[in-house]
Image 1: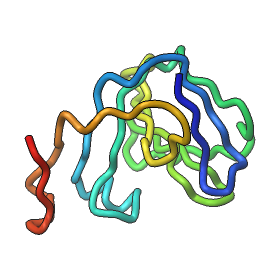
Image 2: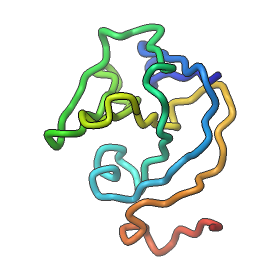
Image 3: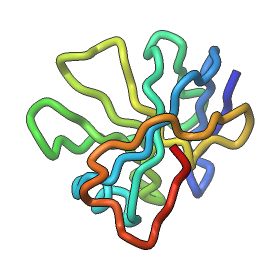
Length: 122
């Protein structure tokens, strides 16, 4: 089981499962949405994910018609994203996890946008 929250603590969640795969994404959308050089996330079963506190603080932003980015509207922390065409899967932003095991990234997406100064064992 995992637990996590946004920066201000108004949104808290629980995932009743194990994370099997983590991904680092370097796409320009993730860079802008995270305010960083990559996003670290994991695809999870939506049915095992629960917002335990602060549902009213969540806001969705559709940068494209098919993908929503969900964040705390109070502090701006990105919590997860989902695709309309994949209703059973969310992509949890792993920087928000406060308890539980997080495996090392097993995949890199959009590596052509990865800064030259970063090195990750593959």
